[in-house]
Image 1 (cartoon, rainbow, N blue to C red):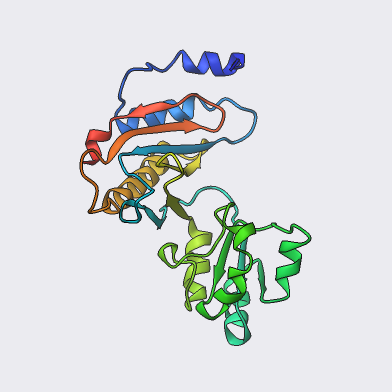
Image 2: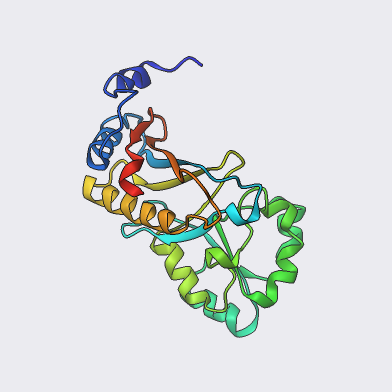
Length: 230
């Protein structure tokens, strides 16, 4: 894959074989984010888990202290008083049954997170084929199936992110924007890593964190020393 000139220039600043301390990795990630837009700084964590086993799955959510720098659009499936509560809490869209054809047939997906009250999961379940593959299906572990819609919306708007294993047993999550200060990115990174270390499956034998890489959207990856996180 041919990389652009900017990418190659940025890559020269990074020792590919070196495992960096968190603070140095954050500094480099900011320095190598040279695109014309405010790049997202992402973390890619390769785990020793085997997601094919239910007891080695990892899925959860964490509120980043400084948010992600992204405006998140929230859709809430709720009815009656809970629908009113969701509106009052600042949900971008609130509805029920009537949204199914809009999402299923018209392909409407102008939202980033879906929250549902437990009594609406029968309705939402019918959208599994559309929402599932996009990682939008509400899930109790991520706090998106709940009666406390106000808390769910507030957390999401404040910078709550979900983490889960992909098919290659890697977790990919944003921890902020290149315009964030180094302190903000370091805080967010530390909060994320604490949550992931706590989520280590009891059934896992051997190394949990095989590699931790920090990277701007368009820039090269910077390896962080995973030994620091146990």
